[in-house]
Image (cartoon, rainbow, N blue to C red):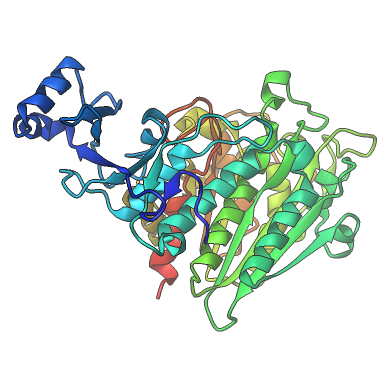
Length: 464
């Protein structure tokens, strides 16, 4: 398998410069053991391993002998993520004499995440520094699969809606199915009504781009069944309850849940997790038009519950409820969903912490432990059922929103839970899927959040 341009092999980069990594806490002892010329060079350049800036150190001939950088946590995949853009262009290899030795997979993942740039519409920028991968099968490793999945999520979220509508999301699912031996089908347009997905149809019917439910199936029927659902609202105007300009600006990312679901499905298939996978993406555009669904309408759902539309901008839960109902009909061992569902989750937890909801204590604990292990944290939020009163309707079984702005992320999760059968293990992740600014390993734009945590959970639960 070909590797991204930020990587090299020993054969293609035989003269790669050694990269020495030092722990800031042990730096003074390391510097004291270096030749006087090296110590003098470090002092002259006021090198500090805490700054993040690497330094090229010359040899006796004046040419660079090695590169030096500080690493505080060798187990953090982002520990090396600043180096591809800060080191001068060229090839580098992890030095055998380095005091800090990250595991090869962590180095690959962090370097690749740090080198990522979305350049579909740009002239190529500066070539990132390259890391030499010593293993001949690095392209088949779990770390490389994680990098590919994260890159897929970022690319999908970053792509403008013009080129990432419901049909384009379907094309991605078809491509994955073809690549890994799965089967993909879609229920499109008015066929959603015929096949009893009325809420998905209602949300997407005003767009000139037909709504659809995308379904990918993969794996052996003898294995435990895993269902993954992702919110695929390819653009969200808010509908007739239209968003203000600043709220609509980045709504190309409202299919971030679908991107996470597709990325996780790719991981499951690429690494051959022994499960029977069902991936579901309700893909729509929440548009404004003569036939847009209206506040006050009562919508049917696949489960049979009637839903009053309190706010057309609470559309994600409407498309998800039909997909969750359908997924639960097959009684999976685990049902997971991902959605850029509420601004309330960001107000509560900020942009970096996805909100985790789960109806099973062990599932929640395992999910959080996987996130901690992968340095990919989530924060558990409560399914506080008394707050269902905020979704009370006088004309339907429940409303999709309510007058109160209290507990917005919790009430959205509680809405979804109404469509999950009693006893069905289920998790819901309310994810931002976005970086507001550039940080090492986290470029501004689309982001995979909680993806490594989700994979760690699945590997622990279903791995051989």
